[in-house]
Length: 403
Image (cartoon, rainbow, N blue to C red):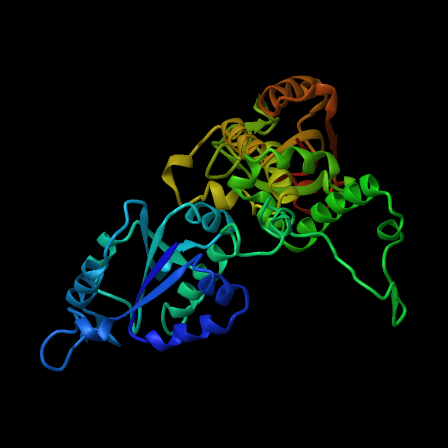
């Protein structure tokens, strides 16, 4: 494989000649590294490679002409890819290195200063970043790619099997590893590794990979690419039971006023004083408390985040419709509702005759049996805003289980 690098600091890549495996790959002609000095293609007698940005701003930008000229000077293979090093690029993953190892040539363009003229982007097949941080230039990211791809080329490593189970190759972190001595400063090698039972050792290693990834890099497990991978189905069965359930609490209170409907659990009630609940939507405190419980279980905020009272489209909205959107969000996160319990706090009216209908309404929206939905009503013994009939409140608890 040929690596052709465009850089303002070509000497930075001299370090690759003293990096063990990479050096051996160069010596064995498995790879070649050709570094093009961008300064050689600078503009004018002073070989200018940078200039001030149009519109003002700090720093200098790499000019397009030197980069284009340097790029066009490279003899391209039929099977080649061009990568642009930039913090705006896609964060580098192991799967990227695996994919790029199938090319015969990789052209790497290193950014510098405050970046490069926007028109340079059209050269690249992909833009690459090492992460959400800024470096002084693209040389270290380029060297990281050369290193990561080279070790995947057959013949580079003495034992290619060492690549199979290492971190990130299958979407998981590698299992813990030990060598001699078996006991060191009070720390012992796990007995299973000394047992000689290779099946049990392999099973232990798989469990440890899942455990370690869950503890250290749960973001890998939650990524879209990983969820679509076959191994994600194994994790579902192997995850610790304590991670399969989430509990959330919800609470809501609204003021009682004249000229408003009294809607609880999607049921329109009649108050003896002909008053209802005030709010931006229909002010259904039962539905609102349940929504907050569901969102809270997954640490997704509260209903104000998704249905802000400043947004006119939610004015007088049916809270059961809002609840259906929250239920959909919960399902999309990979969870399902196990059961709901709630308490309505009000002096009047009587809720008991309407609870069954409320359960039916909530059952349709949440897609769980109505017997798994608890709705209780109580007074506040004439105390507080509920006792003075200034408002009605509701408390709710929701239990979620991972699908």
